[in-house]
Amino acid sequence: MEDVKLMKGNEALAEAAIRAGVDAYFGYPITPQSEVIEYLMAQRPENRTGMVVLQAESEVAAINMVYGAAGAGKKVMTSSSSPGISLKLEGISYIAGAELPCLIVNVMRGGPGLGTIQPSQADYFQAVKGGGHGDYRLIVLAPSTVQEMADFVDKSFKLAFKYRNPVMILADGAIGQMMEKVYLPDAKPRLTDDELIEKYDSWATTGRKNGRKQNIITSLNLKSEKQEVHNLDLQAKYKRIEENETESEEIHCEDADYIMVAFGTSARICQKVIQIGREKGMKLGLIRPITLWPYPSKTIAKYAGKVKGFISVEMNAGQMVEDVRLAVDGKTPVIHYGRMGGMIATPGEVLTAVENHLKTL
Amino acid sequence: MTTSVITPEEIIKTGTVVFKKTENINSVPLSYCPGCGHGVVHRLIMEVVEEMGITADTIGVAPVGCSVLAYEFMNIDMQQAAHGRAPAVATGIKRVFPNKYVFTYQGDGDLAAIGTAETIHACNRGENIVIIFVNNGIYGMTGGQMAPTTLEGMKSSTSPYGRDVHTAGYPLKITEMVAMLPGVCYATRQAVHKPTLVNKTKRAIQKAFENQRDNKGTSIVEVLINCNSGWKMTPEQANIWLEENMAVYFPLGDIKK
Image (cartoon, rainbow over all chains, first blue to last red; front, side, top):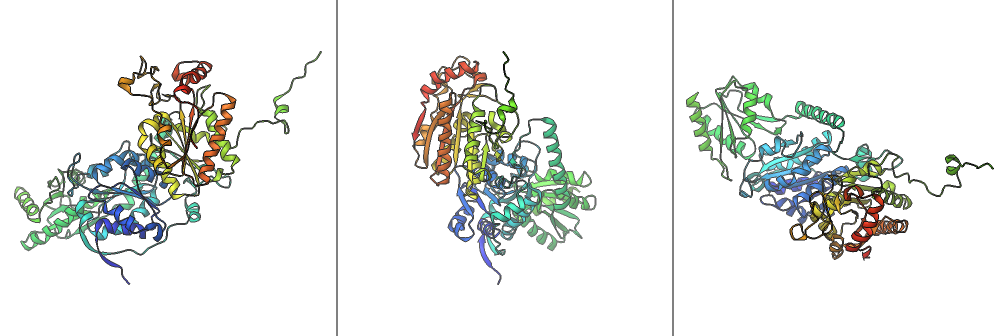
């Protein structure tokens, strides 16, 4: 029987984590994602699956607990919102450097600083361009429905372990807070320690048994020659991820003469804009990146030079628009439309922005 | 008269060996300065782990600082933590591997300055781990800057005229602080500049690991060592200075047991 529920995005993600066989969650409360840890605690996951759920003393401690448990080969996650993610960045850089698989969830709110608790997409740069120090990449997934909040948990861990790389689910406060129908995934058991050792004993700190070589988790190379080799290896891995894991959705693009690009909540708004626009005879399409890194540049490039224009609709001052412009490579005009501070654009506003742009083309 | 020369091989031959390096210490040169106590503390931990038969079940966490490369010397599974975060990293490991032995190896800057929150909260949760806290009153690796445990009036590269407690605060007795917490089952301060003290330190480390085996909570073993290069002294002078100054402000012995 299908397990269908009406749930908040944050709760759907938490339930999906238990069902994905996650071994541990370490977090610190922050609006608008505190429901994740609240839901997990209420579920007594230690009884349901044996999952560890711990409220840390800070986001800094939480991400370092993730580092430790991920280094032990376990399936580990944390979640937070924008200011909390800023605190986690040191740890994220270390996790990327030490090549540890894990899931980090950012349910974005408006910034900078303490900003607002209302939804935002202003952490796009932070998520996809680095954020922490050093040359590293996160695999970044952008859910636009409560269903995807649930589905992306298992998907994230598959990617994280496939590439031994941290994965981020970059949601926003609206996706985290809103309630929708969600088909919950089937539950799968956590790995036993024996299964874990069989799979990850080549690198994880599971204990130096049976005379095997010691396993070391570190991001340190004091010798430049060695560090450069490590950097080159990381870059080669990132290239493989770009080639194999880029994902996006194209909506009504086949006959479109104008294309919107948007992710998360903004993509939901743009779907309404397509509907209203098409009723008025405007041939609008939408490209919705599902992976924000790797970015679906090739998909966007297919339409460059063919459509009249692009608009990047974001809940920020214009961040992803830079990647749209890089993909379009000057072949077609690209503009940005966005609201900030927790304000969400209406479909009417976006349509007006599109119409105004079209007049100039 | 002929003198018989004993060759090293004869000394090492079976039956006359009175001391042997534990297999848990890798056969590589240590990166520590001559006269530094880090090597002794490394050896003591690894001997205890070997003697308790827990080598395959022990995971160590190395800090940032002089002992950042501890994993190159200790032949066990290890993780290197960001500066100050070792107790959080150890928490992560121990919570998912409750039957393993997990310890952190931290200096004073790591444990008592940048990592104060992680130290106190791991102790307050009573994380069932061992914290080895090596206190030399200075930042060794970065070149002798003032540490949270630098004594009043003590010179360092960032307190070149001596630590002024009115502007830089007082040397932090963090082991006494965490000893107050109910989650801490054992807090002790030891030293390794004399053979008798080395033996005592080893017993303290063993007790800490036994506490972990018995699920008693957090054990913290502080070990005073010299930093002769940072203190700008010979190793011998540094040991005397340690005894006459460090061990006065930071008295040796059990704080909680």
